[in-house]
Every structure is written in C-alpha cells, then in structure tokens.
Amino acid sequence: MRHLENRPAGLRQSGRPADPHRHLNLTRLGLAWAVVVAACATPTPAATPPDLPGVAGPTTTLTVNVFAAAGLDAAIALDILEHPAPGEPLVVRARVSEAEQLAGLTAALDAALALQPRARCLERYRLRFTLRDGTQPEFGYACEGGEAWLRGAQPFWQGQDVVAPEAFRQQLAALLQAAPAPTP
Image 1 (cartoon, rainbow, N blue to C red):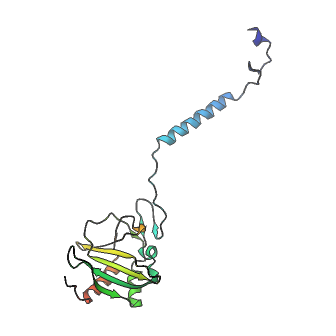
Image 2 (cartoon, rainbow, N blue to C red; image 1 turned 180 degrees about the horizontal axis):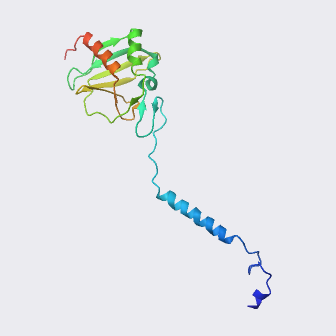
Image 3 (cartoon, one colour; image 1 turned 180 degrees about the vertical axis):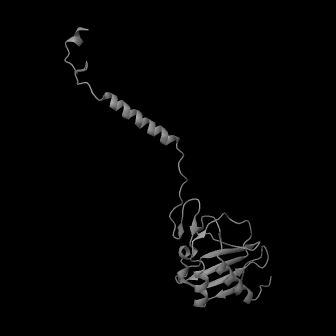
C-alpha cells in the first residue's frame, strides 16, 4: 500500500482529482431512472383526432358544426332525395333554391352538434346541397323511432352521426309534407 501513502490527498489512483460530489451525481442518476420508469408505467392518453374544420372538443365529446365544416354558407340549392322503398333507387322528392328558405335550413345546422356512434338504421333521405363552386356535399337523413340522424362520408363526421337539430327537423318536415310523395 505504499503507492497510496505517496499520493496527495484528493487524488484517485489514476491521478485525476476525486469528485467530491459523486454522491450527488449518483442521486441524480437514481432520480432520472425513477422518472423514466414512472413514465413508462404511465398509460398514454388517447390519441386525439386530426384537426378538421368545424370539429372541436375533447376526445370524449366531439362536436361538429356541419354548417362550417361543409361550407354550407355557400349553398345555393338543396335536393331532398328519398328511397321510396328499401333497395329502390333514390328519387328527388323536393328541391329548395329560394335563398331565404335555404338560409333557414342551413342556419339550423350552424351549431356544435355532438358526434355519436352510428345509428343502426337505414337512411331514408339523402340531402344534396349544391354550393357556389359546384361541389355537392351529401348527407344521409335517417329517421327511426322519432329520431332524426344526420350523417355523411366527409372526414369531419369521423364515421359518426349527429342528432339533427329540432329547427332543422321541423323545416325539413314542412318541406316534405308540401312535396308530392314519390311513386315506387
């Protein structure tokens, strides 16, 4: 142990100075390891859906503003098509092109509507809006048991439905009542 006796105090055997804070470095390393382990054990939050126009809300209760998401402020016409019988092709039941009437219908969809799982019912009506640029967003309007569901294939629906607002249902019911019934 003679080589230790000749070494100046505070030097390691390699000749480098000893780290007086070595116990602090080990403590920091231990804390860092604990944080990593805790982070790995914590469940990851649910993935949030992509940012879509007109869609807002936490992942548990998403809403969609159909008016904003579909650009219905540019609507110039609405064709209401109906399936006269299951499996039958769609027929035009009514057409709305009067600006005031169309504005009333589209304004009823200018609200945050809660997205819900798809209703297990057949779509009875297809609502085809014509926009100023010529595009035609279409929505299914399915009625079952007094409920009126709206749905579509656009990304903002996220494979779900919304319950049609009462004002929209009333206006659409009045239009359908005034229109002649389709013949199968």
